[in-house]
Image (tube, rainbow, N blue to C red; front, side):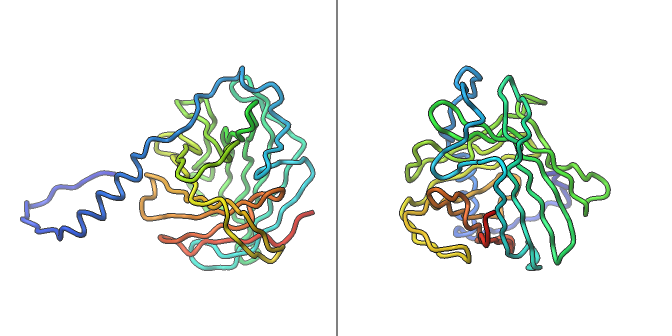
Length: 240
């Protein structure tokens, strides 16, 4: 962020405001407990059967909700049969297509792989944003390219308090997640679930946005809710 220095002014900032800023900065500097990526730890990377984030080719998950402005949104996740090799590891291609008020606005191919311990890795994305005429592929990145590093989308053994990197491409994608609980009860249009994992997601690139996600055993992502900075949120409505 560029800072423009104008005439110097003496500004008295309330202590509470400074405390809020400090807390926010501390949050983004939390040491993420993310293992180092090593292709030798992936002997069957396309077998993604993590209890909370399994990816079975052919499955389609549908979500309804609202975008950041509160407009009606439809999100379709398709687990394809396609693969892409990244840093010597075959990954599963998962397509994420978003419609706002019935109009196609974005489509993304995300790349996932599971290591031998059962961690599900997120190794990049190829995004096309049809609303961004100047740079429709903004936000795209690939682990191992231009310093980008893959992260974890789901831990093999989630524990409350663990913070981990989900993606890191400097200035492009810097998301982290923290496990908040392992025993939530959550109801969405598709069903009601117990022992749901709740996580908090945040990014130094969007310090004013905090999102919570909910994962049910043998189903996966069932709900996403933005707590501040946006009106975006979705809930699972169907699985085909």
